[in-house]
Image (cartoon, rainbow, N blue to C red; front, side, top):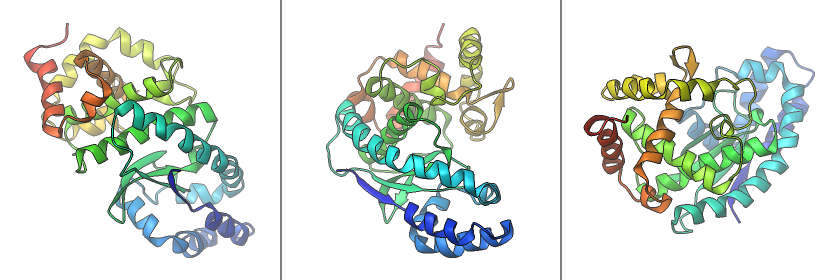
Length: 280
């Protein structure tokens, strides 16, 4: 059984209390009744990549979010229980220690994030992003790979190193393909969200140029945001995930071999591909 902390009972209690209140009062009640019921969870979540910036949107659309969360809870429990053993087996890592999982309602700032809760590697699942099960299965596999990978590393990896980020994300994409095979290629990057039909063809058309540009940015800490965050590369978002997938494919190593590399070794492997032997 996966270690799952489900905060949605507290969210439902908040929603019942706040439903007829103004948006401003809803935000206050959110802090008091929802976050206040799990202060250690939200402290850890906000310490990672969660923010309060989208809270106004959540409480304004409370009815829609509440319906989505109700649908998501049972599905997320089932997906975690199904996917986690497959990820652990594919990576060839020990079954313990295993990641913790927290089901919560965030503020539309991230769909899932690996952090630390009470010192343990924890995957925070943000249920307001739930849209359909197959896409969420891919997302759970991807993020669960990150969680197991961090346990194998024994340290929290750097977030401002472009070469490492390519290795880290490329490994997660490779593991997701192994655990959830046979999906359309774009789903391994977008998890079933619509509106990105032209993204993968564009990346493939510009592959060589993207690899050259990525190599040129290796020593720029700010480039992680450009390639993997909210930044744009020629008006295209999250292009670093495509580059990461291309690079890890070229490494031609098994998943167990990949997750056993240290941060320094993973970074060096990517740099060797991009600098010492530039892709053709």
